[in-house]
Length: 149
Image (tube, rainbow, N blue to C red; front, top):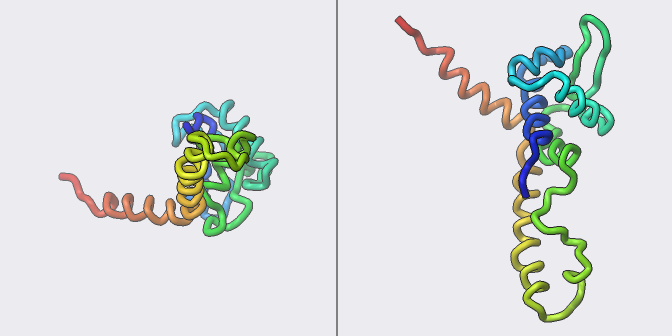
């Protein structure tokens, strides 16, 4: 499994909103500038996120995007699944894996691929935007205390 540019940029942009919104809408051009991502590309990504209900948008001069749910209830898994589809290394719905035969293929399906898929989903489902924002603030809080002469 490889996370595409759409998934990586979408997750970065969602974290950017969580960090920079302070309850207000965040303009797409601001996100694009801070994250060094094409605004046109972000428009496509945010169209998907909006249709999935992860962000809300407001048009106009004071418009932009805001995360639709609380950041404590929005997980990395929610975002990546909307942008990437199911997060699997091998499709578990493969017909050959459903057979009860004692084959190497079936053994690999149950003992390897299924466990990898479960582990990946467990990780992304247990990281919220709030967790990432807290870590980001810890990292940047330390830098804010540095003085340069």
